[in-house]
Length: 438
Image (cartoon, rainbow, N blue to C red; front, side):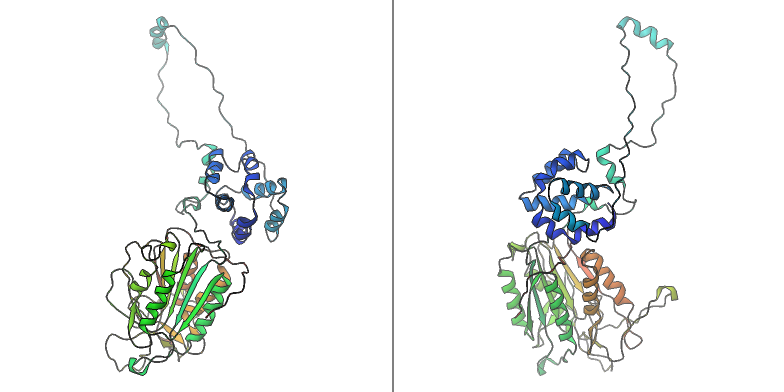
């Protein structure tokens, strides 16, 4: 299937899962060659009507260039006109090309000989060298799997997380700006800008967003514990966003830690552990996303020289601040205030993604007037690409754009992720009911 038609299906996935009646489509899809009987049986066995509709739409993307127009035909033929019109709105005009007939060799029956004539026939038969075919001929049912270029992962071999619950799930944002005097940590000017952007963005992605500000270490743990005790069965995902100072700590899986306003830190390892399958059973098998805007350490990345063709225009002012707390005292006039990230103990770290604003060991830059590089870029990338791209692809876009920036004309920043997701993750992008935050 062409990428533009896949994008149409992805943009309208929520409506299709909600309104599609797949049972009326099965015979037509088999008759038109879109699916085989075995494939339809597998779709039927996936569960409820909604589950069947979801699997049908996802599997449809793997069925070749004729699948989309034939699917539209089936919708029209079964009276599901509103869905057909929805998919045709904004979709390029599709010209249905006739299918190329499969040419099969004519099989001639072998002559039947009596046992007495066998020896005589063998003597008269000339011997020819055996010619082997250069490649096996694929069956029509497997022909669609050869359409992807070699070297690229086939979409039909990758599953996609269910992300159509409404609301999609909880999103907790902890925004630490004003630190207590005894903590010796500076105020994080510009963090409220980051917080407002992310609150709006995840509401637009149909999450229940809750914002907590200026929490001590004990209160951070209490909020995470309360989140883990919620019933997430009706939801598909959970998001935690940490905006604070950070520092580098010993770890065994996820690096770094974030500070409470009292100067006591919480390891990222512990933060992720609150939502692990053992401590939060209702999130088992569901994606748990953590976004950490904090420094990974005290080092400043000065980058390395590249050819002019590889450099894009960068931005960053002389007033940019860091979110790192150095491991040792320093009189460096550029030492600002931000954090390192820590690792958490996870018995089974599946379905977890931790996105860091900076590479472990390095500082993270923040503009007091416009917010951090990482959050500003993440917010824009989600706005522009969430309708068509999966989360991991979008995070690579964030990495690329942030890496082009420079602070004080000298220092660089490189975001990164620890990815334990098992499937592709596509956010909801359609309008959702108004949500309130506390």
